[in-house]
Amino acid sequence: MATFAYLHLWYRSWRHLDGVQMYRVGYTGATLVITSIAVSVTVHMSALLDEGISSTYRALAALGIAIILYRVVNRSLIVAAIALSVGARKPSAIFGTPADNALEFSTLVLGAATAVLVVQVPPLALLVLPAVFLLQHRALLKQLVEAATIDTKTELLNAAAWRQLAQRELERAGRQKTATAVLVIDMDHFKRLNDTYGHLAGDEALKAIGEALADELRGYDAVGRFGGEEFVALLPSVDGPAAVGVAERVRERIESVQVRVERRTGGIGSIAVTASVGVAAAQGGVELDDLLRAADGALYAAKAAGRNAVRRAPTQVTTAA
Figure: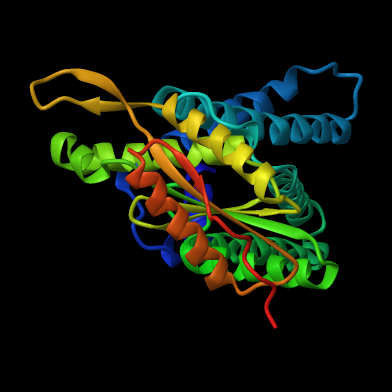
């Protein structure tokens, strides 16, 4: 069972993606083996059920328990690894979204139904296979889309995906004549951090900032990594003064972040990081590059003010003609 599940994961996902890390592959294999053992024990224990229950009902009960147990054990092992390696995170990142769980549960149910039909009524199994293939195609498509749009270090949108989403939001704001604001967030002294503690520490800092932004901003704000140590956030229906308040809250949250680093003198420590934030706002439709240019100018003003500061563009970006 574990071998089959592992080959299935490779065929569905890993062979299409670059940069698959072997330690993750090994851990995934171990979780599948442990999960399969737990499920196998449960299935064999079904023979101990009350003999008064028909064999069909016993088999169905064992199958249902096995499906639930497979999900619970496998997910618990993954949650434990995440908690031990990176600490607490958002529930959706640990347990998966409702859509992800529904997809996996549906796949398990259809797989179980296929197995039963293959044993009991083989011709009918052919009727289930198209649904199984469609579910797997949907899962693969979702993973490929995420690989093309998500920045791997921060799990935020990458620059290209962020621009597309931000442009659509600005077009909507133009039609509805609503306010929009942009934050450009740049980590302070990032090169010094890399030079002092190494690039792995820099990656940890980027990841920590990405998590802080995802937690602090609203779910429908477009948040992305724009490149290097620079992040961007587009805030729909937020005017200039409100955007400055959001930027201050983001700055304070970043200032509270502690990044674990390996000191070159030996031992593990933690360091604080800060960021400067530039804010620009507009009413109605504007060009995205104009809004970014205004926010970038405000960012330079924040850097000139001594860093770890928020500055807003002095004038509101004008509506596009």
